[in-house]
Amino acid sequence: MSGPAKPAKPSASRDWKKNTEETLYTFGNLRVLQHIPNHEQSMKFLERLRDDPGVKKVMRKHKYSVGLLLEMEPLGNTTRDGKTLGLNRNKGEVIEVRLRTDWYDGWRDYKTVRKTLMHELSHIEFSEHDRDFWNLTNQLEKECVEGDWTTGGRALTNQVFYNPPEQEQKVDDAGWQGGSFKLGGGGSTRSTATGTEKQELSRREIMARAAEERMKRLTAAGSSSK
Image: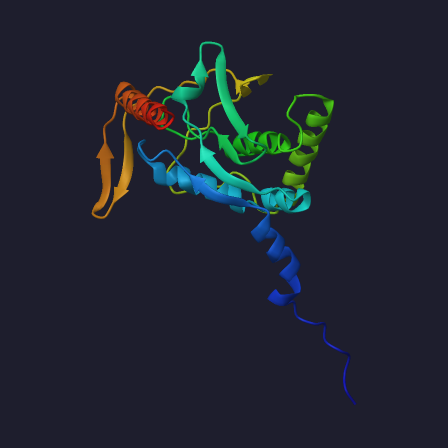
């Protein structure tokens, strides 16, 4: 006499619909600022956003497909009045998020950046910051948190990252903006084939490098439009 039937084991084929949707509704490409030290850590940050279970749930549920998720350049998106934390171009063709601190020597709080991403995803459906937009943003943030089954606060690597305290956010036509965050400090390190190389770069040197790279891009864009 046979015993009770054993429950069927889950298989990868049973999740084909979910797997297919996650392939369709995601970020096609990730791009970081190659000219700034430790850009490998920024790539890990973007990969973590892309692979976050909560983010994947939101993308899949709302059928969002973003062509490019891009690290935003802090220098070029900071003015006397504030700073842009995120931008959405052409209804999700490109989304930029600000990963680094103003001093280019750390990364911003992960969950705060993830909230910025939810804000920019809402612009796929609503351009203006009206009630419909904010209702959707609040919904996406809630769904993202509920869908994240992992524990929060884990570091990207063994390195300690500076997470600046978030001040009250404000919104204008340029994007989602916030107050000014600053951190004093010296150099940074980067991994090489022979180990860890100390890279003593002052804030002035890093800002100059970023400004030079930005000027090159603007010059190239001007030349191509002629």
